[in-house]
Length: 375
Image (cartoon, rainbow, N blue to C red; front, side, top):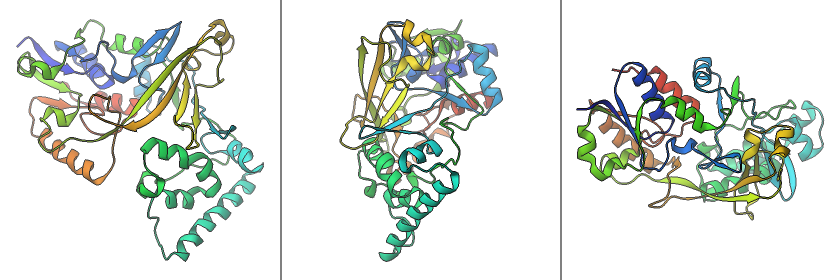
């Protein structure tokens, strides 16, 4: 065998594992079926703008070890995620905070905002009681209990139904366990201590992790599985776990995202990286303007063009990129059957969103790899 580790997939899990194994003196080969490295964090440079080809990726963490680790590979910039919601042409700050409540109701103090929320929550509770219902039966009832009718109808309902392709009354209540409410004027979406984007884009992070490590793109593990299984003592697999086991229990379901990318002859299209469109009549969920992840102040105008991506959430079908696990009973039970098989493997490590059938932010993926033994 030529290698200690064959790493299938060059996204954050695979690239970080390869980096650690290489530093431990292990010989690694990384293969990826795509034409590029980096998995879903891959960026394409268009007119000097790093375009997040598989959707916006904003790194955030409160784990100093993880933050120091990624910054040791490439410095991160000061980008702070402050998305805006557009509902029927009116703009609202996200997450829900005093700016949002002022825009929604004209209230200016935390006490006024809390009173308005409490009034609408009480109304939702009374409506449920009239129907003889003790617990929320669906996502709509849950959201109304948590935040009230105005915010639910303008900022949650349409967006959520587009994202899931189902009515909120048909979605389980547990999808929204809580809705953070901030009674301060703070538009920073994340509560984490650290956030930012790699200076020069995510490709620099991946290239730094995989420096001096052998890689092959346009290489599908399943096209010659017996060969690839023979080249290394151990396999790190980051692809779909059901495919690894030949779909023996059935296929797992996903939600996916379609992107409509456009190059515009203007330096500043929407003035923000992320604007959500929360009404159901607009088919896309949000517009990303990529330059705002890395360009600030005059730099926005020094680059005369801009690139936007409209995002459309859709059901996954064969041939499409799988993005989000479907969190329902069927898929959770199916995934658990595959995970049980995975625990019996002595020489295969499963990791990442697809191999674990689990939604991951980027920092927890890296944290998990940093905690793993390299043997």
